[in-house]
Image (cartoon, rainbow, N blue to C red):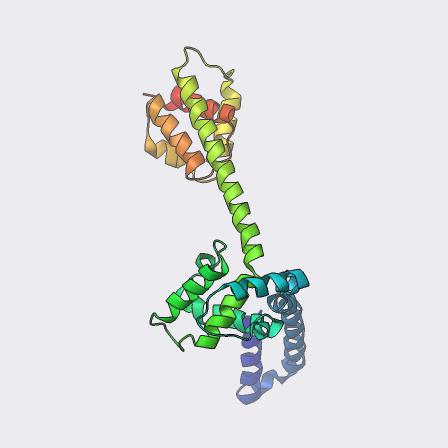
Length: 260
């Protein structure tokens, strides 16, 4: 939208300076620029408000927690803690995080997992001793960003738990699929009733989610063990959502149609 506004402005200026015979289009261009500006503002304002809304970080219980944690950290000097546990201090800390810390680090790396107050301060202090691109992190910067990181730690904790829950669920599903296809491969008979038409449909549906089916053709024929490895890798590395029975069916289909 911003690019479109720029193009419209350049067009309008060009008409005013060099192409006056297109002057009849100026009112339309003006209205278009106004409409685009309104749309851009409408789209941007919610994000701007959200960026400066600290939400739960400013709740009394959290402010009390931040102050308590802050006082437990040895900063090597006496500090006026209350001035560092406020909306202004959090805003300044956020600016340091996005304007200085993020110059060298991905935000996802910085905020990947929660830390104690001492842990956050230790990380920040370690960064202040390293050369960075742009203005260095001052003493006040380090205190403010530490305060902000302590304030948002509960949110980081929730996100970290969700990530770990997803990872555990993925690991569990992968283990079940591996165990299932291996057990069925080692059994004397096929425990899952095999329907060639349904197996073909399942194969086309699931295996085309991440890659072209021509990739399978290019791989060529393989042994049962080879197809088991490929299907389990789909679950483990590509996060394919397959149940144990679905994995068995796909392996059986591949063995029957592209087996050695």
